[in-house]
Image (tube, rainbow, N blue to C red):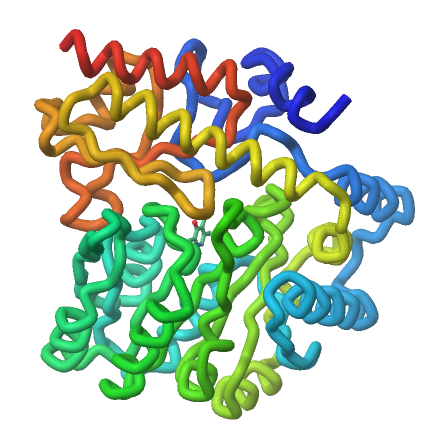
Amino acid sequence: MSFRATFDNLTAEDLRATGAMKWSLPAPTIGAFVAEMDFGTSPAVQAALVAAVEKGCFGYTPDPLIREVQDATAERLLRAHEWRVEPSDVHPVPDVITVFEQAMAQTSAGSPVVIPTPSYMNFFNAAATAGRRVVEVPMVLDEAGRHTWDLDALAAAIRSSGAELVVLCNPHNPTGRAHTRAELEAFAQVMTDTGVRVFADEIWAPLVHAGHRHIPYASVSEQAAEHSITAISTSKGWNIPGLKCAQAVTTNDRDREQWRNMTPPLAHRTSTIGQAATIAAYRDQSDWLPEVTAYLEENTALVHDQVVETIPGARVTRPEATYVSWIDLREADAPEDPATFLLERAGVAVTDGSQCGAVGQGCIRMTTAMPQPILREVIGRVTSALRTR
Ligand SMILES: Cc1ncc(COP(=O)(O)O)c(C=O)c1O
């Protein structure tokens, strides 16, 4: 059976039985909020996990395993994105947000952080925990209707706020953009001109749809490498965020100095089974990832087409990557708090857009990595609740 047939055949009962966060709300509510896929992980990762369990590899992180994570990561970056990094520049960390926390810690105490919005929610939470004010800079739509940065507004916000750090999320959650080289080069120029550092979150890089490419930010120019630190992970592509093993990639001497001299290294806070899974994922050249990505592309297209067709005034992203759909209901005669409304009236749990920044008020963020029969039911419930209110 092809992978997609397996995905299509999964039932809500099967998924509830996994105990996953997304499926832990009381039935019949369906979770479309947290970024998890309903499809388990690839057979290669599964086999590596079984082998690790059989070996009983549950102790503190051994150096040879860390080195293998570094090697497998560097191999993947070169193979998938033509980005050459030294394995010694790969630093295992429990999760991507840890890298953001480290990047904030390198800036002056109390200095604000600039975030283009709408944005992944936990950047705001992590900044607040670190005692940092967030300066939101709304993205704008380009002539093709795609979200992009307002570079003048970004430069002005950086200069007027005294921020030393800007968050770049590429591919972008929640708009699904896979930013082009030209966009990234122009962004990098503004960052260079304003003298800030960039936290480049590339967690979604493995899930880029056909016809688009992931361009690693640090690879676009020497200046970009000089002023950025990158975070990557197998957690979205191979659906293993609970295994806690992401990677920071250093591309300048300042970060190398900081990360190589950390004692104990953050790698010691990753899990051995997460490392085993990461190595298998980055070396996985089976059809699993391409098939999952193609399926996700269809899912985001389904959401786009059906919501646009049935809800007058709704604007829906056509993601170039990710499995996140951003639905703007501000001109769709929708309730003021659409997420609560949909939870109560449609039994679908989505993320309220306002959690993604002020610009997200009246919008919702929906994750779509579910079997298509279930996704059709979700879309049906959402559109009929909005139509009949
Ligand atoms: C853009 C982005 N960054 C970070 C994360 C969280 O990653 P982690 O669990 O590795 O901190 C997510 C999760 O959805 C995300 O979408």
